[in-house]
Image 1 (cartoon, helix red, strand yellow):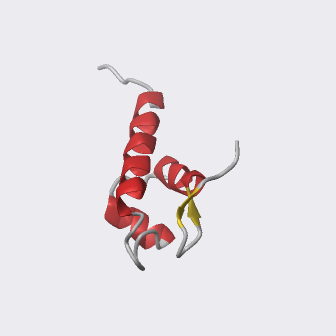
Image 2 (cartoon, helix red, strand yellow):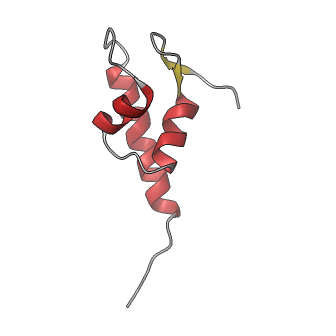
Length: 68
């Protein structure tokens, strides 16, 4: 699947955001620190937040359920 640029200023793609979520990024502040996403003009913030939220949800769904 082709990558879609979310943050043009810092060349951050949807793949980058999904990879960050898979690596443990769960907050938008963490995403900004790791990728620089939305720290320039901010036009991409809404789409970046949405993409991160969906990616985190996907990661959480794939984690094994542990029962005691």
